[in-house]
Length: 271
Image (tube, rainbow, N blue to C red; front, side):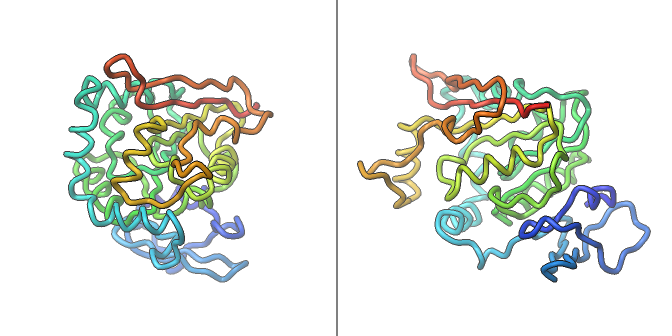
């Protein structure tokens, strides 16, 4: 973690500014501890990843998904490659969403960064500034850290929940999420958090699988979440976006055989 990143961080529970214990003069920090003076919680920095949650503290779908990703993270690269192959390939599928970001050499936050599948396409842009990534799966973040280190990219990684982002308000020029929100325990809270940490006037982009694809994924993951009709609630969460947001737009993405297999929701935080 870069020392300058400390200025962006806050306690995910109470949003109090954090301090770095045993501070040294290094420009980066791969090991250490962050401390919240208000709730007196400590958050470790281990192998370059800041831990804002403990896997044992996760509940509901967050717990089940974290366990799944920790177990199958080694296969994520090949799974993604096979999944996107019928849609024109991984580059086409990912850039179909990433091109919607308004990059201006500012700070970019990816919520649910996984193993970093979007980074090769994001970081190749000359308009990308510092990139920050958060996920609930330590195994995926570990793989992502290896990728970042091997490529020499400026990316700081955090283990945390989308529903409680460990960042101060108005910190990022671009905020995006690809894949996963269909199964978030608290979608509304996650969206509100993305809005909170985005700077006024910035765009927020959220994408995931269509309802039909999500139901297949849910059966594969053996998820039990259901609606009264016993169907996974994977509708486009446009109704959860506050009416105060601007330029709200929903598009179909990942077209195959004449049908869209995903959606992209984007909107702008009022300036």
